[in-house]
Length: 227
Length: 227
Image (cartoon, rainbow over all chains, first blue to last red; front, side, top):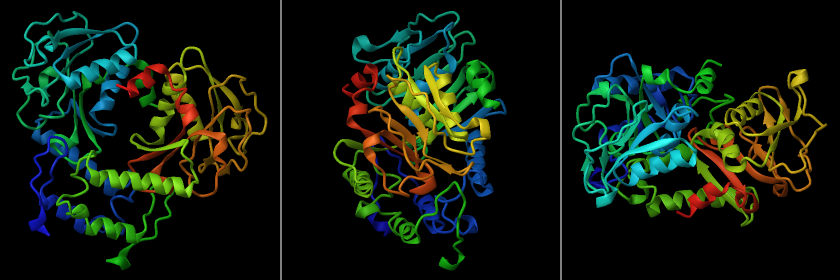
């Protein structure tokens, strides 16, 4: 069966190491000797706690994240983050800067606009069909965050140096280059990445959020967390 | 290995038939002879089209759904539908009726309120700790929909007869009793059910929507569908 495996260089779905697939396969009827498949066990069980805690620990080790950072695995892909980010961080009295570098930045901007959130396009390379990363910006002084797309596979551009914006946190969609290079995490308040491009199978989105940005989430959601 | 399987009567996660688990296991490294795992293939591939189209067809056959009904498999669980339903169907100029029969109805109501949507509690059994299904309602004449929870496992109550509300569509969270009985689909505009209770593994939510309700989705989203 191994010899039939194809080499998958597709831009979207991630090929997984054969050893990982084999481990999943061999334990599929009886995960960790619990007598059930991993698809059948409770998300509240200690068997599943081990899976998620291990994934968080590995992420923190690989990206050198200290205890200020929280690692989440959410549904809805990076596209749901296009809505969740402004819903959680933009109220009636604040705004955010977005930099438009291509297809996915455009979708993130559109989603914030559909939600009637006040945003400012602080930079764009739309004038030349997104063929470059902008270097001139009109940042808002009190922006809650600056949103960027770290890598644009469709246009072939990538941020090589992330802007310094006077302590305003960068929120970055890193779906297509997460884990491909070391990151200076001090600049980021939140990073999100659909797993299927670089780090895993389709169906989960990794979100990394720093404590100080989390504390600025709109009160209505913060209150909900403590219910 | 079969003899180690446990009998899982847990209220949350669904046990799957052993034959289904074995089929997944045996094809896990090479789905449908494509040379890849199903976790690695594109959602745009014809291999995956077959999977999703087959699931839709079986759902339609089992629930006797005609061509007015669309079957979707979405992420975020039934809980995301608590938000998606009011976001899609409640604008500034309309309202909806909610009937509160327990823990999950309460959460659905809370989510609509967090989103600042205008809703009316048309019935409730909160006065007796949700120990019964209400029979007296104050429905709104022009409500966009009436939201109910068809079964309340925590309190042990279930709607045995769904209300007739003068052509206003019922939207029902059926997570815990979907596929357990025949339904008169004429009354429903939308049904949603987290798969893990009654029909499959965790990770997907089945949403069934009727054409005439779909056409009433807020324009901003309708326009988006055609982009």
